[in-house]
Length: 143
Image (cartoon, rainbow, N blue to C red; front, side, top):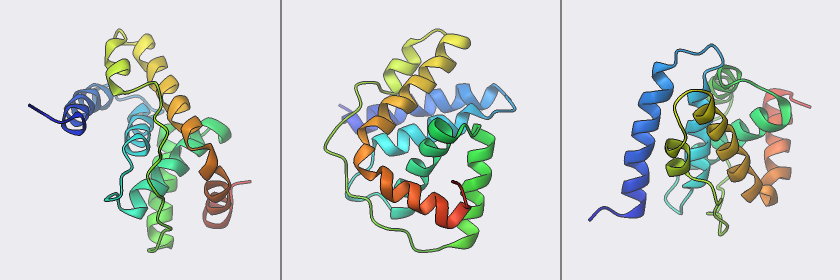
């Protein structure tokens, strides 16, 4: 019997296949990657994974970056800095998950579900917003 984490990973793999076949210029795949990573931060999560996921959600939802722009920001961050603060696991879980995204019809409904998922996950991390904003300002000059 798979664990919840294993089940979620299987569902995410299915979603990733879908988003990568879109070949969309906005690269919605990056948004799904960030939502999934942020929703699954654990004590074992590498600092870079948690920080990049949260910066990605911040840039998308609050600064209007496309997934492609977030991907480029992640690449820039990886070149500039090697040490990232450890983000502790979140005790709050978003009510929206990868399963909810896959339940939406392919096309516009599923793409909207990915955006809804990003929003739901980002809202659970509100307590880390000041750190994420500070990192985006310092490392990416995003104001």
